[in-house]
Length: 138
Image (tube, rainbow, N blue to C red; front, top):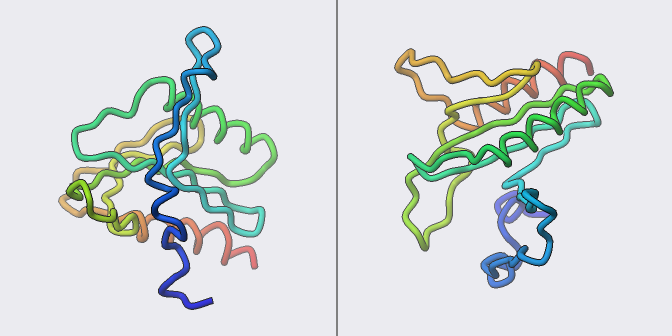
């Protein structure tokens, strides 16, 4: 398959459809979504959430992601949640690879990106984890 096409939404009209989860409430529990998930050879799982700058990562969604990563840790698989932000205008496609990592969750805790003046993109972040946890063991 053409690499330029891989990763693009195949059916943008369908992807634009809003999902109504109102019939799936269980007390205070409601469905959440995962913006993206990568799995590398059953060794590394990367869950991604993309937010517009300034938009909060809600507590329930945060807990769900934490619990998924913690559960995967019991299986001895490396997993991480990446929270990234972007300023893409509505109507334009978000280039997820260029979104800026603001926080990540691994090892049972959240880590804020160090404010060292250097912004790390989602692509750079995942490349590091891929090289560290997939390639090194190959």
